[in-house]
Amino acid sequence: MLVKLLEPLNVSDSIIEKLAEPIKQAGHEFVYYNKKTTDSAELAKRSEGADVIMIANNPYPTEVIDQNANLKLINVAFTGVDHVGIGQARNQDVMVCNAAGYANQAVAELTIGLVLDVYRRISQGNKEIHADHFPGAFQGSEIKGKTVGLIGTGKIGMMTARLFKAFGAKIVASDQSRRNPEAEALGIEYMELDELLAQSDIVSLHIPLLSSTKGLISKEKLELMKESAILINCARGPIVDNDALADALNEGRIAGAGIDVFDMEPPIPGDYKLLQAKNVILTPHVGFLTNEAMELRAKIAFDNTMAFLEGKPQNIIRR
Image (cartoon, rainbow, N blue to C red; front, side):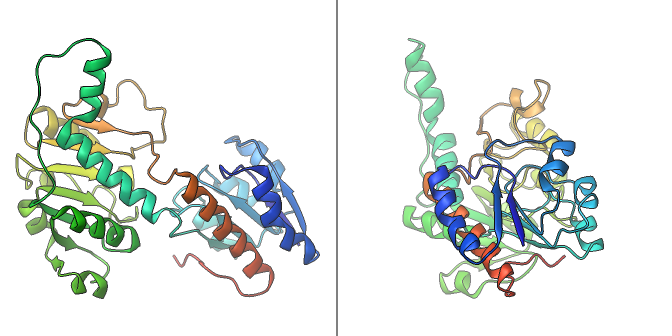
């Protein structure tokens, strides 16, 4: 079979070569493009003849899938697959798999980092010191003793819960899909979303972007939060009505936010309302992006390819 990796995976070429060696030894052909592209025509050209294509988080749209009748597997080296033309893949009987789990620790740590930055105003203090402008010490807050509301208790949610526990926080949770026995074993109390929003000092999102979760944190839901509460989103941007979030921040209806994901991938247009919002820390979708996570991601992706080539597909997306 012909396997093509269409974009870099943020690891060295030597790591890619090492991971690809079992594919070649098994008699398959492997082609690697180490420059990314978002151009559909170029993606279609790169995909020509491939049985298996491997991508990361750049779009792989319907029209590209449609042009490759030979395609059997879209191997996504990423957790989310909303950037892939899933409907067209299903129409062509093309399997789609992902690399869920590679960034659990990375995303959980950034979640904590954003809370600390919002609570202790680290970024603001750094900026003022460098600008030789110090209006006086500012008083922050601690995580210890706060109620953290986790929306989603999958693997990333649970990793985040353990980190918050280490800080001495109380954890409550809401999950549309299921109750996680691991969460209950940690003493995490499940409750309805509205109750969680009303009780929590820190609300942190750890759910996928689905039709049922798009716009879940709406203007009405934000109004349920305490004025002293903060919202953290390291999941998917469209889960939150970000215009409503900006309004809530500017009007003082919630105290702050830490946001790593948006309604589009960075760069963010200048008129995006969160850019002008008060008390918000913005990072450019880097929750998954650590050296350790990138190496694990590459390994999972190549393991997925080998499993498929051996007739034992794994991490298949069922939707």
